[in-house]
Image 1 (spheres, helix red, strand yellow):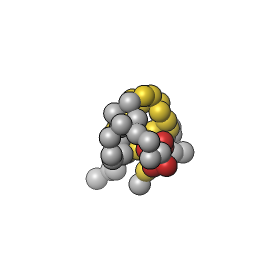
Image 2 (cartoon, rainbow, N blue to C red; image 1 turned 180 degrees about the vertical axis):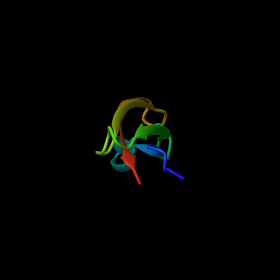
Image 3 (tube, helix red, strand yellow; image 1 turned 90 degrees about the vertical axis):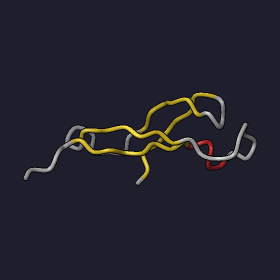
Image 4 (tube, rainbow, N blue to C red; image 1 turned 90 degrees about the horizontal axis):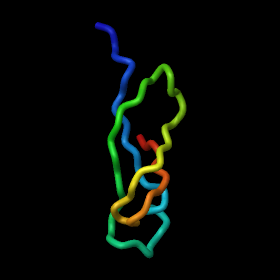
Length: 62
């Protein structure tokens, strides 16, 4: 059986980790898929963070 090239990755807000002055406690996380062959580096997208209440960068985590 061949492995699929698309994998599921988790994106986490970069500002929630270090910012203590946010609207609610916790860290915003999104799940998405990426093509392992085309995108070998870590994925970084600008998404809406419900805890910071604004659009922030979300980076791929393990």
